[in-house]
Structures are given as structure tokens and as C-alpha cells.
Amino acid sequence: MSGDGRARRGRAWRRVWGRVEPAALPVAGTVSGIGLWWGVTAAFRIRPLFLPAPDDLVDAFRREPGYLLAAGWATLWMTLAGFALAAVLGFLTGAALTASPVVERATMPLLVALNSVPKVALAPLLVVWLGFGVQPEILMVALIAFFPVIVSTTAGLSSTPADLRELARSMSAPGWRIYLSVRLPWALPQIFTGLKVAVALALIGAVVAEIANPDRGFGAVVVFSSTSLDTPLAFAAIGLLAVTSIALFYAVVAAERLLVPWARTV
Image 1 (cartoon, rainbow, N blue to C red):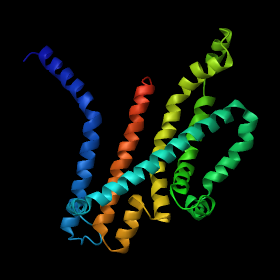
Image 2 (image 1 turned 90 degrees about the vertical axis):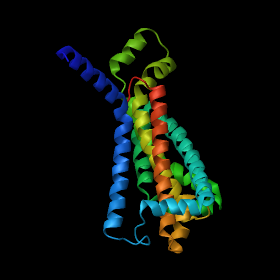
Image 3 (image 1 turned 60 degrees about the vertical axis):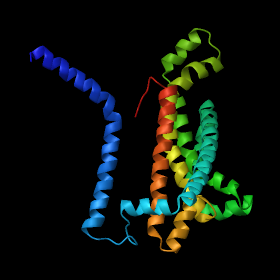
Image 4 (image 1 turned 90 degrees about the horizontal axis):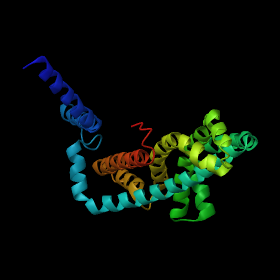
């Protein structure tokens, strides 16, 4: 084969690998991790009570599919509701802070102090204030996911280059037009960075709320299965939590690529 033919084949292979690599590497890493986990449990003969093997998790799911799927739906619904609330309130708060530097300097220490409060400590108070049910759990999710959205929104809206704003003003654009056409598009990549962090925290918040009040969701499965020493069932719930987290993260990534095609970060 001539040198030109080999070069063309090399370029074609690199193009194909460039398309396959984003999906192939995460799959390869996941399969390798599961294989290592399986090998450790088999090599050291670890009892399922202490560390179940991957096939023990599959058996647990086959044993309780309805229970785990119902718990997964409850956790997913609570996560999405709290994440949506955190995203809306976080964006509005960040936009309000960037509208006035005085308000930002006066308010940001309070927001940082609120974020530093352990949210688990607030769980009993939320039940006292809002009663039993989903409302305190959704609020717990929103509180945990709220701060990254504020920080990313504030940073994004504050980072618009001054020359772009001056150019828009020189064209007699009104303030709201500058905001929508210049500042917001410039800030979207950073806002989505905060949303990707927030969606993972939202799932953690849902599980924290469910463990504090174990009446539904994956958190309740972990609590009850740990009490009954059914470790494979607890690990099955944790494994489904990991899958849910990956799905939610890449759903936000897909939304970012759709809405912000000029700034692909993942």
C-alpha cells in the first residue's frame, strides 16, 4: 500500500475513533471497575453481608424488582422537583445579585452562611415547619442544590466583557436587550456548569431527605435493608442511584449541547 493510502486510512481511523471515543472510554472504565470489584470479592472470598459481588446485586434486583423501581421513581421525582426549584430560584437570585453590586456584597455572606449549615440538621426543623410529606423533602433537595446555581449564575453574568456591553450600548440597544442578547448567552456555559454540579447534589439531597424520613425512595431502601442485614439489596439501591446520577448528569449535558452548542465542555 502506498504512503498516501496509509495516510488516508490513518485519517479515516482517527475520525472514526474521534466519534466513538466519547462513549467508548466511559463504558470501558465502568466495565473495568465492575470487573475489578468482581475479582476482589472472588479472590478474597468476601461474604455478601460485607461486600456483595455484582451478581448478588443482580439477584437482589430480580428478587425485588417492583420495590426497587417504585423507590427509584420516588427518588427521581423528588430529585427533579427539588432541582427545578433550585435552578429557578438560583438563577433568579444570581441575576438579582448581579443587577446591583451593593446587594451582592450585602447578601453573599448570608448565602455562604446558609450554605455552610449542615442540611441534615435542618431536616427535623423542615418537618416541624412543613409537616410530614414530600414538601420538606423537596425543600431539602432544593437547599442542597441551590448554592452552585447561584455561584455559577453570578459568575457568568458578571464575566461579560465590557467591550461587548459598550458595543451593544453604542448601537442604542435597551438594557433588557443587552441582558438577553449579550450577558445571558455569555453566561450560559458557566450556568450549565453550576447546573451539572447541582443535579448531582440534588440526588444526594433526595437520599438525605429519605434517610431522615424513610418512608419512600432509595434512601428508605438503604435504611430498611441495612436494618434487616440485606446488604445486596442495599447495594442494589446504591447501584441504581449511581445509574440515576449518571443519567441526570448527561441529561443536563445534552441540554447544554442543545442550548449552548458553541461551548461544549463534556
